Amino acid sequence: MHITLSVTSELFEARFSWEMVSEIVETPTAWYLLLGKTQAYPLPKELMTEQQQAEFTSFSTWLKSTRATA
Image (cartoon, rainbow, N blue to C red; front, side):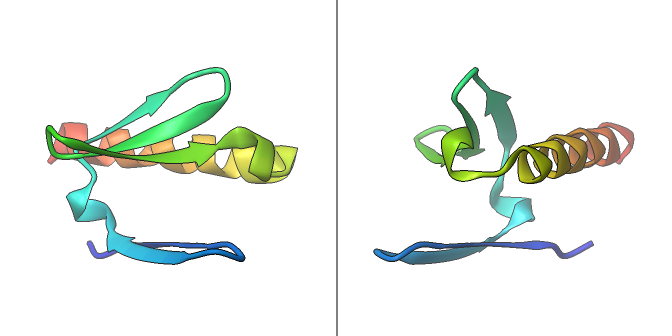
């Protein structure tokens, strides 16, 4: 399965494959996509609508479950 995450703002654009994400850690204010042992990519919740947050939560749960069964 190949899924690409694309994040765009006024200041930057980032794209990477979900295969690079080793873990997703959720805090009250953000999700942190861990890229190996030394890098993390923050996704601040305040920049998302409630619907986008719900969609990301569902996607994150689905992604974790697919990796658990792989």
